Image 1 (cartoon, one colour):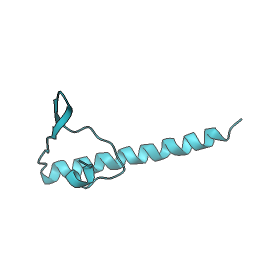
Image 2 (tube, rainbow, N blue to C red):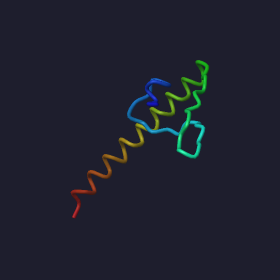
Image 3 (cartoon, helix red, strand yellow):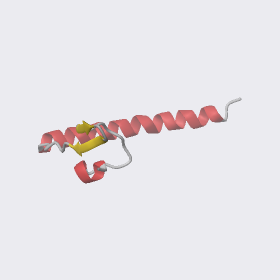
Length: 66
């Protein structure tokens, strides 16, 4: 299940609790987050996206350095 459906997040990969069976993922365990926890999750996601943006810029500069 996309995280946008669970927590309103997009363009970000996060681990989520799941029930794993012999055929793989059987069920995603949806955590009920309170308002404070949801804010912390979104703040954390924003920080990760910010760092990824910096790394993308560094990586693109190195691609042109010879």
